[in-house]
Image (cartoon, rainbow, N blue to C red):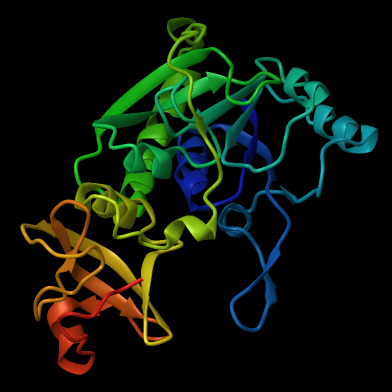
Amino acid sequence: MRLIFMGTPDFAVPTLNALVDAGHDVVAVYSQPPRPANRGKKLTPSAVHARAEQLGLEVRTPVSLKSEEEQAAFAALRADAAIVAAYGLLLPQPILDAPKYGCLNVHGSLLPRWRGAAPVQRAILAGDAETGVMVMQMEAGLDTGPVRATARTSIDRKTAGELTEELARLGAKLMVATLADMDSHPAAAQPEEGVTYARKIDKSEARLDFSQSADALERQIRAFNPVPGAFFEFAGERYRILAADIAEAAGESGTVVDDQLTIACATCAIRPTTIQRAGKPAMPLADFLRGNAIPVGTILT
């Protein structure tokens, strides 16, 4: 097929790779414009942009697709379909209508649950037992389009990073299979019941509130690994907990109850297993404790 690919972060790269490997003619790749990154604030291309250039594909990085000029340039590609994976820009109706088979989206949830920007993190935070990835025929609404294909996976104790990578791989395979036989993957309307929205993650959500249950905090830690990182503060410094176990312990919420940095919660406690002090590398708890003792009885916030 003659395809346009539209994506930006790492999540989208496996789908781009899979389309090229399957022999599709990717005539253009759309991605978000380069952004300032790292301490030098040097303009850095997105993961998709960088990979597309490695593959020798044309890359387009418009700030918006609302202008008639951009829409005409898109339509002039005469694509059979546009494949969208975490692109990050709204697609106006003329864009949705331009390709022969419209725009197909790889979405990382079991729609209609978790429509929106952060489906992986929201599924973990909510304690969902499973999630998945879907190939959706895009329409003007936010992730409201009919679904052509689904793959499911259990969440278990996966971090957001691990789950995102898994869903990216599943989505790439699913998209290739769908394109190989569109007739066997008809678009089916989403159920009207069970709709939830996965709003964008705000950095303020990453602060650990030890007045919650240990179960909730353990999910928060996994949902915000690798970014933005669930954290507490001690002596004016920020500490990110990247992994933790639930422990049987009691005490005032936020209190360090033993020399293994076990922290009391509303119910039970959490014990970090991987922790990162601001400006330092992440490390196992045992290594951290050798140089960063936090006294028993300390109340953390």
